[in-house]
Each structure stands twice: as C-alpha cells, then as structure tokens.
Image 1 (cartoon, rainbow, N blue to C red):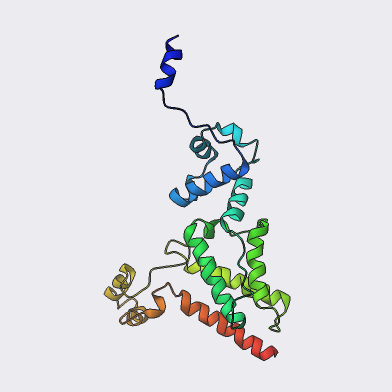
Image 2: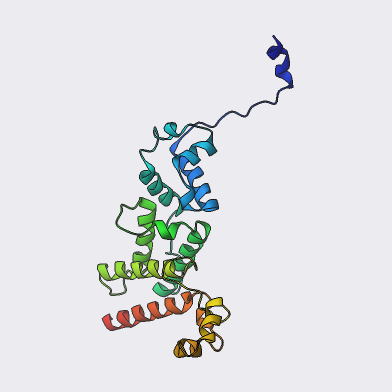
Length: 224
C-alpha cells in the first residue's frame, strides 16, 4: 500500500518514444556527429534510445544497412541549381559550396561515401544535380558524370585536415615551419613556403576548383 500513497510524490515518467527506423537513424547520426563514426554501434544506439540492442534488428537488418540509411538521411535533399544564374560554372560553384556545408555539419560523411556500394536516392540526387548543371554544354553524358566525380573528390580531399591525402601546408602551419627549418633537404618546398600562401589557406580548395572549372570551360569551348 505504501507505493500507492507514494505515487503522487514521484516525478512523472516521460513516455518512451516508439522505436522506428527514423528514430534509430537520427540517434546514430547524432552519435556520429558528436563522437565520430567509430562511436556508432548498435549497443550505443540502443542505450541512447532506451531499448535493447536486439530490438533494433526488428527495424534494420545490420549495421551496414543502417550506415546506408544514415548517409542518405544526412546528405539531405539534393540541391536545386536551376535558379542559380550565370550558367554552368556558377551552378557548380554553388554545388560545391552546398556539398561542403553538408559535409561540415556531418564530418564523417566524406570517409563513408567512398568505395563500391549502392547509393540511396538522395545521395544519387546530388550527382544528378551536378550532371544537370552541365546540360547543354556539349559534353557527353559520361564526361558530365566524370566532371561531377572530380568535384566530389576535390571537396573530399580539401574538406578536412584529417582527410586522407591532405596536409596543413599553409605558410603558418607547423608543417611549414618544419620544412623551412630543413631547407637543405626540401629546397623547393622551403622556397614555396617562404612567403604568403593564399592558395593554400583553404587547403587549396578555391585554387583547385578554379583549375577544374577552367579545364571544363576549355573543353566546352572546344566542343562549341
């Protein structure tokens, strides 16, 4: 009988949200955003949601399927570039800006969107947007797709100092200081880093993008 009388003094428990694919995915994305993709596990997700690990498997078959849904959810709706003025180049510049922003919000995306795999409709829609930006330029379909893949690769390679293949080479970086201190071993690098390095300040993203788009412009002019 004590529990009956003590009931009114106990804080009311919040009802537990029903488990669903979207709830599982949202929790997984929150973990990846905060602690990195390595922290995402079925056990961690279940604990954060207040369910057992096995209950998650009623909604997603395995972690691989979960990751695919996470990617397609996190990338968001593909950008509509049809209203961007000034032709294909401005559209692709805006495409890169929006892609970089999505990857900034979800820094785990560049590392998990590589390799042979099946994309979801939203992720494929991003490629569609880039390919559509080059419609009417005289490039063939496969050339437009190749241009889109180059853009994805360039953004991935310049997105973060921790991305494979990149290095903090700007003039004020620790790496630059080490290079300048061993000019006998690295004479050309030391000279290149001896003054201002504006092309490297954003990990060479703007410089590289301009060169990519200049190359496309030359090919498009040749075709016309």
